[in-house]
Image 1 (spheres, rainbow, N blue to C red):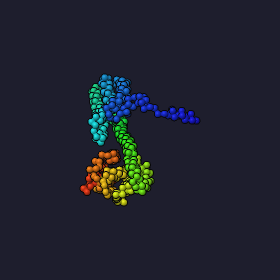
Image 2: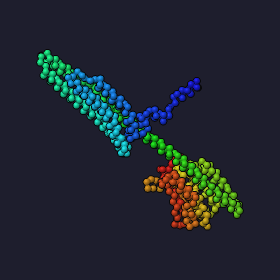
Image 3: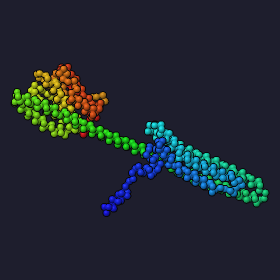
Length: 440
């Protein structure tokens, strides 16, 4: 039973696309190109050459076997027959090629999608109208030619008819021809109906539908491709952010352990207090760092708690340091990039507070400000340290990482600013677009 299913799956296996195109001939090759493109038109035209040649030979055969030799001038009806059949072939050739050729000219213009679609519709309609005009003209002039010949021959027969019986026979013949004309008119109406069906089938209407289907499919494929590219870029960005975050995390630990070692030598009680605060800090932040290091955004509340724990450690290490954290309750649930706020606080301690003798203070603020187009979240770390005279100009590893991460996440919609305070110290601010902040 299992072998039978395997055999069935092999039998129903789809043929390779290259083999399908090879076996399908020029028509299948045309489907590999945009509808109405020059290459599509070439393969589409080649695919109709053999049917059109067979059609021509068929019409020639019909004309050969349908010669009307019973007329007084046997050559004239044959010419009429062949002219009519030739006009039929030319009309169908115009129906098949003219609209598609005009659409190909529109394609080469490279118009906007909406304008191009309108141009294709007009081209197909013009092609069908042109072929219909040829058909009507052929039918009109062919009918007039046949009527003229029939009228001339009838007059000649009436002129040469001498006996009353011959004249009556000619009158009966004219009545029969009138009846025949009525039948031909009915047949002509039926022919117009058939022509309408052929015009829809051969004139390019289905190719026009195919163009719209293909355009929708290409649009969806382009969107899918852009989504895949965006997903790949996001994954790449997250990997890079993880690396950058891994560079930031050790700074605080190394600096704090160095402070503990120095405190134990000079003041063991203070060293023990620092260790106690450090343990509290690590208990609060290590699980967060593990889960959020690779995350794009986290809640602002968690980052403020980490900053509070960090400053608690630093105030135990530096008794001269005081700090405050200010944030409105409604902002605590706003998503922000992880580890940036801690980096700014650490940078303020390292480059502003530690080099400064005497009392020092750090203020961490989070508030909403009106930007150029929308509301923004401003995260500020203010210190009264030595300022730019004793600090870096913002080109350190931590600040460079922050700038790179902001560029990865928000492009030009987020900035990092450093400026000197008039009373001394530095204000480091991160401006984030609240509405554009990606939520994880």
